[in-house]
Length: 389
Image 1: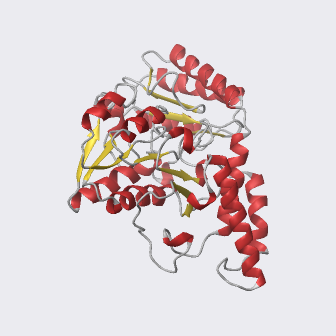
Image 2: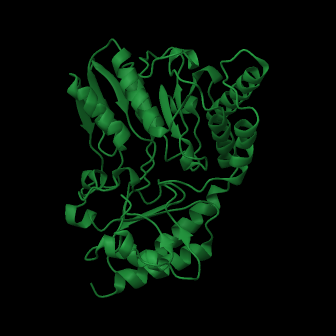
Image 3: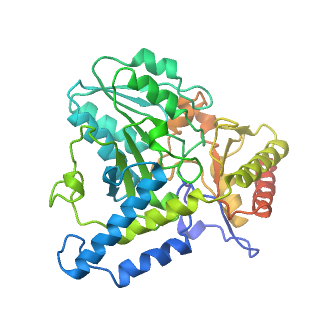
């Protein structure tokens, strides 16, 4: 949840420049993405279902974008569905697979899922499905043995996120999906936060469905992808003109699709190892400089540009406001839970006491964030956290 204050009380950032460390909420839009999208917005703007030449040009651009996304994921073009974002992709996967599967009405999700998955499962529960929640350890990791114990003959879907937006932990999805495959249970993973940091190959993962969101990769907000393995039973949630093989009706956002394809290709070419070193240096500086600071999430199996902490004895909101005064913009956790005063369900599921969970601070960044930026952020956090309460 990104902390907010009354507009009249919002601190004024320092004149030395600002540092944006909230890419997990939304990454900066890439210039290359905008340049790739512009011809589809200003020139090739026709409906891709129209049979005249402008429409056919739009269709060709859409077909090319679909093929590029498929190549980035190790998938087939016909398995790619463009959506309005990660939330729609998650809703479509969880509800669409569960509603179509004939084997039963039992669903398994992890305790650290994004609200788009958790609330979709809750909706299924309201219409008669049974939803079980897989526990996690203190690093937010799901145990494959626990999944095996909880699978039943009537389990219709398992959904476990690839990586946590809140604490950065990366799951061993291939091992979890292999367990589900032993019983023929469809497996969905929300890979929204992992794309751009982790290599994603749907065949190697062994899943049946995977969700992505463009704005985590540098596209404008409003475009996502659902990869759905061929022949996976699926009930569409959006009905209409039968676009995208009837699985997601509605006139396609051609420019958004091109932007998504471009962003995935750019992300695949980035140097994440350097980013990991910068992350580890930042974590070490905070742990050394802030007495009692505790890293949340897995220490090594975590996203390259993700560092999150709880700060015993400090006010998380006060720390965030101090950082904003210093021109550093970060958050306390999931932006999709903004406005909630309750402790993070992910942190409490990991065994973090509610009062300690309220002190959470999250820093998320990309390859354009320099070592100097992170050093300045660490210094500002240390000053704030070490100040008298």
